Amino acid sequence: MPNAILFPHLVATGPAPSHRDVSAAHREYFLDLVEDGSIRPLIFHYHFSGCLLLIAYLLIPHTTRPWVYRARWLVLAWNCWWGWKTLWETSSVSSAVNFIVGLTAAWNWVYSWTWLVFYRPQWDARRVKRRTVEAKAHRHHQTWAKASAARTGHGRELDGKTGPEASLTANARRRTRSQERERDAPSRWNGTAAPTETIADEYFWEPYPDNFRERLPWLCDLLINFRLPGWNIAIPQLPPPPPAASRHPPGIPRAPMPRGRSHTGLRRCESREDVFWTYVPRFVLGYLVLDLIKTIAIHDPFFLFGPTTYALPPFLARLSPILLYAYRQIMTMAAILTALETGLSLSPIVFCLLLGPPCLGEQAEPWYYSTHWGSVSNIFSRGLNGFWSSWWHQLFRFVFSAPTYYLVRVGAVSAGSQAFRLLQLLFAFAISGVLHAAGSVTTLPHTRPCDFLAFFLLQALGIFLQTVAASRLRPHVKSCPSILRRAGNFVFTVAWLLSTSWLLVDEFARGAVWLFEPVPISLLRGLGFGVEGDGWWCWEYMGSGWYRGRWWDSGMALF
Image (cartoon, rainbow, N blue to C red; front, side):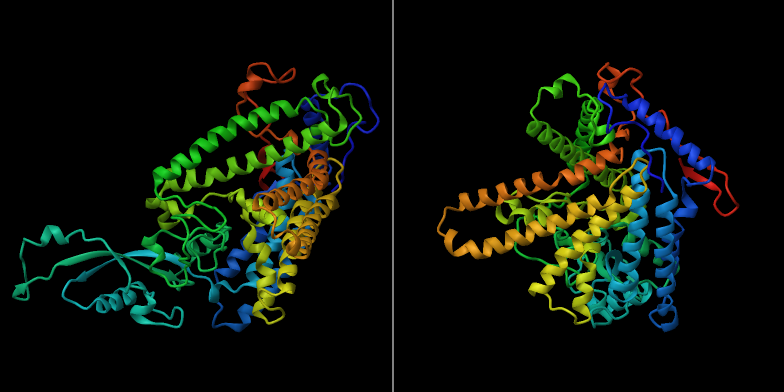
């Protein structure tokens, strides 16, 4: 990927060009590269073929076909090569899309290793599923459980059990619908009064389905839900399912904790109304805050070029270097938090509120959409480790921890040992660093992808140092008031983040991520708080259309 230096931002000392001028220069440069064949835009069917290959392979049953299972290495090799190829020949006009291009290419590597090597989903993965059954009141409960299991094809062995135990009806939740209606209306069945019928909701573990029509949504649920709510391999930070579901399938934890909350402070939504009041206000507020942050940031040349010698606007020129540094760190942190929360709020709004259970079944139930940020108390009680492992969103925790748990399963390391914790730390931050570095590779401006990797590895170092220091100092500080120890954890966390975040902040700015327009309509710029040429409508250049190349790479693309 050619990295461009389109402006003399490292030597010029006059006023900086506007964000509109910088965006226009990037568009012209990108279109020239596409025209001469140096790079491609993001072509949907072409660049996502690796993901489609992974899905196609996992749709083929291989639990009884060893030769098919061994073929996973071919799929893995292809996806690694394809991701590498995508990384160096693909970009976009949009500063956000070109970062996502690299992130997606690296994510394909990570996901392929996770589901082809570290886990065996056709053997290991099961999800909570609900079905409705009918039963005669005079029959033994296990009789209709067996019939239901046979009828739906789910009577296979689960957790070493078969029949009614496998279908998990011993603790099934019953909803009597027709019972009251028919209780006083006797009918005849083989010459005798018909027994009362009961309609019941039964929850069970659904393994890899035999039926293709059921297999496709099962696999899509597995691959799309990164935190895996409702799966037996869900990340432990999620709150437990509601009692209606959690008391049925064995293996779902029921640890004593506040109702609907996990040990890290994630909260479970109890109803669609709860989902609405949890996520819709956050989305609206996030939209307004993103508009505010973007409108402020476009006046600072740092957010257009990264470190630069261009003259600062008057409101920043008065700040001392330390205050200016802190301002840019805080602005970047606020933008990241707001963008993540606003984007993540779309999932429950669309899937739970707009589409709902009639379209998506259990995957649209409110308890699937727990909150994304843990309690701030994790930072006070555990310091930097609590910040990253409990307070920060855990969207990718499953893939970050997959290599370590694989080593546990093959006997290379013992769970809970010091080696286990150290490997878990290194794998998590190294994978995160690689993902962000890959996003930096596909940006148009000149960047330093290794800075992303350095930032995340420094977080692992900080956690290690704080853990060692805490263990050494524990005999000396255990008599100190709790408030002082908690304050020490918080101060160390803030100090470490402020002293290392320049690597992340500078690299995001170099990659022109701030040129991305996060909102289609800007209230503030429409009212005149932007630069010359700004207005209400911000998505003037939605670079999508038909890319015409050779027959195999022609198609819809993001430019």
